[in-house]
Image 1 (spheres, rainbow, N blue to C red):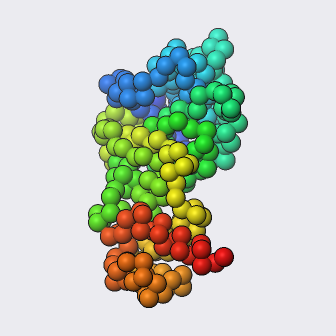
Image 2 (image 1 turned 30 degrees about the vertical axis):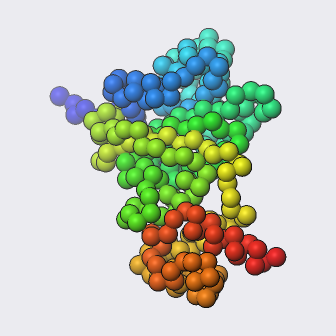
Image 3 (image 1 turned 90 degrees about the horizontal axis):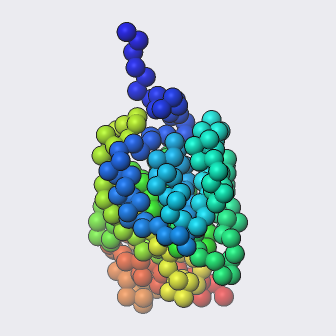
Length: 274
């Protein structure tokens, strides 16, 4: 008897280089769609639809659905599976380079995009930062990620998982872990647990950093060496006396400082440069 290829899913060879693990358990597929609660007014975007398991539940519930898929071999399968659906557009593209702002039907009056995706673990962090650059066009995002990454995104200060990803994602979005998904819900099964995170971009009026790029630079420098104090990590940006004036303990570790504290530091630097 020939040995069964565990990476073969519905006649498609799951590609490791694309990080393909197809969600196949109906229970979790339904839970994701129930969490989104799609309506006939929504313009949805699905990143990495794969074999269309989530697409199948979204297609008849929304006003417009765009699929962004990198794997050329999957495009004909998706086109055949959803032929005749006039409100569906399929884009063969790399999501890391894709202009999501162009998908919005009418930038002035139409609803903002709602995005869902089972993201390859190897590109999840850069893809989230790429999507955040289009946040003015996005209502909310629902992503399947490695559970460890979701924990980092949602972490609060004074925890081991709190860092640059936590701060910069939470600066721009409200973040919530919805539920975990076991390896057995996928084909082929990954070696780690997954989780669903909901990200809801904040209104620009609530973003208080004078220079968000500078905030990102300060946060990155602070966490380059987590075990060092904020005094040492930021010595090329700000001196100890100023930290004291800002009521920040120079001997504090980076993971103990709140997002507001990092904003305070970057805003002082932004004003000092003027």
